Image (cartoon, protein in one colour):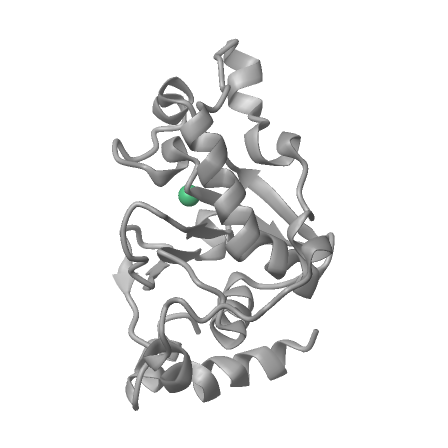
Length: 190
Ligand SMILES: [Zn+2]
């Protein structure tokens, strides 16, 4: 995929995407939604290293299925096998070991971090917005902070479609891709 094309997409599609209903996912085939193995979603190098249990509860497994069904499966169908999960489900012990947020959606099976080899995180976010995939929270990290994307999906309440950028300087900046604001927001990542 072309970086220029996707970059233009972020600017061009923002109004449409943010204004769209959160329930508007484009239809995808069954094959596209079966694109993940459990090991990709629950394997944890930290758990292995520290001997921590990282077995998801039935509730967390159900949440992971929904995340794959609604977001990750369709996304992998778009970007291919270059999509690699860098942090999926985290048991409370694993989450603590990686100093995750105390309320992290990773512990519910509602969130994963991932990269797409050869594609910048801003371009992945652009593609997700362009594709009208549903999400609860979407965060893209500066290269200095891993350059990955965090995406979550929940069935517990309405998905917020919250978009955040995590700059090299730390913290996170709320990004609104709407009207003329996207031009300013684009500057955040250049
Ligand atoms: Zn995350």
